[in-house]
Amino acid sequence: MICPYCNFPDSKVIDSRPKNDRIKRRRECIKCGARFTTFEIMEKPMLMVEKRSGSYEAFDRNKLIQGIFSAIKKRPVSIDDVEKIADSIENHYANELKNVAPSKEIGELVLAKLKEIDPISYIRFASVYEDFTDVTSFVAIISKFENNEHSEGSASENI
Image (cartoon, rainbow, N blue to C red):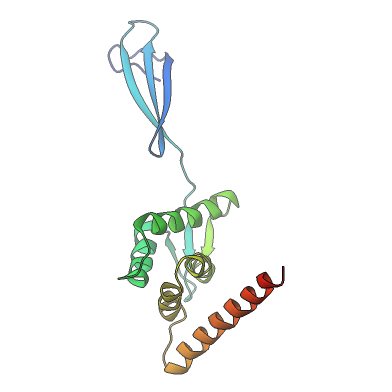
């Protein structure tokens, strides 16, 4: 790390601590002895989203969070829950070392997380994600959700 005081190209780390989503390092210049602080963040690979139309756009975490917020409006889902969903999606693709994600797959990951947290938010998000155009679509997703809940409940009762 270049010293900001004398521009010497080397320094030593005196202290290192995690702070939020980054690492705070206290450094000392080997040449002049000046101390300074640096912050280190993990660089995530650029993620592109393949849209249904076949076009591509850069992954936008804020756009994802806004979509989730519209589904959880007036529901008992915390901001931390939404942040965790967005983090899990980003981490999923970073861990898989993928730099292209189909929008359909992202939507399915969000639905899986919302299903665990709040059924109404799940149905709201599904209605936008699946682009429901009639009441039959709503009834079908609610029936599917209820059938999964009953089958999971009865399976856990048998254990």
